[in-house]
Length: 232
Image (cartoon, rainbow, N blue to C red; front, side, top):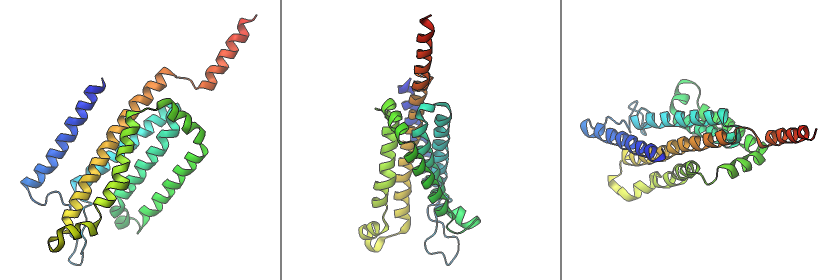
């Protein structure tokens, strides 16, 4: 029942958005979008913010969904693995502060390069399977929502969350927390779209797997074997 799922998406996103706004209104500063860790810290961090924590949870969920698709829907594995890799790369990027602070400086950059290289190699080596998988599932509401989320995360938020833009708009009244709040909430919107897109893609991939449980090559072999046996 797709309409029921979309109603649940609406309720869940509305509730999370309401809870975050009410939290800040009830206790100003509770969203922790600009935390100064020391007197010498000029920039602060938003890594302890509930908004960032929710983003990390959503990315973990998206990665788990894509892992499930890759494991249980072989015909969509060529698509699910790259999207799962992208979710993992985004998760590493969201955890950059903790990786730098508790493990090694710039570790997150190294991890993203490794993940990105593996994804690129997978896509190049499985480009034919990728085309077949896209042909089987397109048009796809899930992939459309994933694309919309990617547009927000890769393009829109990079320009709208650009610090010089807000310095120009606010002038002498500029405060970094304004820029951070806008940027983080826009990113959260993009991640919401990714979450919905991942779940819808998984439903569609599962439907394809149930309808065509065997690879095409195997079905053809079975058919040829059956035809050969029928001649005698």
